[in-house]
Length: 282
Image 1 (tube, rainbow, N blue to C red):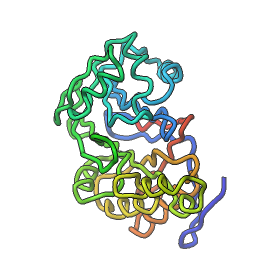
Image 2: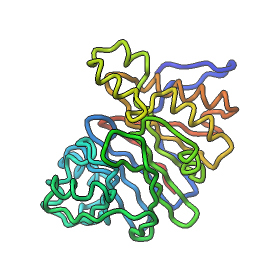
Image 3: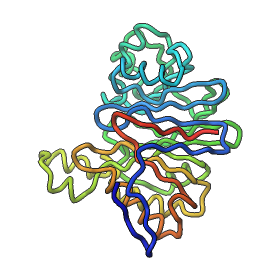
């Protein structure tokens, strides 16, 4: 691992394995994150929720088994939007398990068509899943409808927001009460511009309804200085237009500019597409 020096202090460029002992009774474990597929586990002591089911069905079962979780233990699957990297494994899952699937109301019928066996329920803000309350933020993305979600157990809150082309004050208000957030840091703008993607795709990704860049995510982190946010998981990185080192470097510099020392005032982790050893837990 390489290092970065800020004001004479050296920090690790990015973290691969990371466990934070938090005071929260909620935990978050990203299983897969990126354009190849997304799935995140949210847990309380009595309730297990999957956020999206967009990677391999078999690989998802394997990751759950590693955590001693059976598919029947999952109380609900919460869907962000209808793009395939968020719902690809849902048809096979719903063929074998009648797990309730919560999706934004405008795409509920789309999800039903994609996964005909699924028990799809239109999501209503404030929905109670076991002992966890779930609220939503409407993202700026080129989907029919795309939500970020906030999971709450009493005063403990975790927010997950990816697939949004820009940010606003509403997003800051949504994230600021949370001790832990998972936030998109999709691409490095220079890498994207100079890369081999078709121009139309580059424009789409950089648009206000595409994906947050590292620089935009850095702006959000600066704006959240002084909030309750203590742990940040940088997620949905592009395999072609970003690296863990660049994303982490950008976030560390943003935090330093806001007077926050990584590892002391705030903890940063970069989520991997395929292999993650991160759980932020009680």
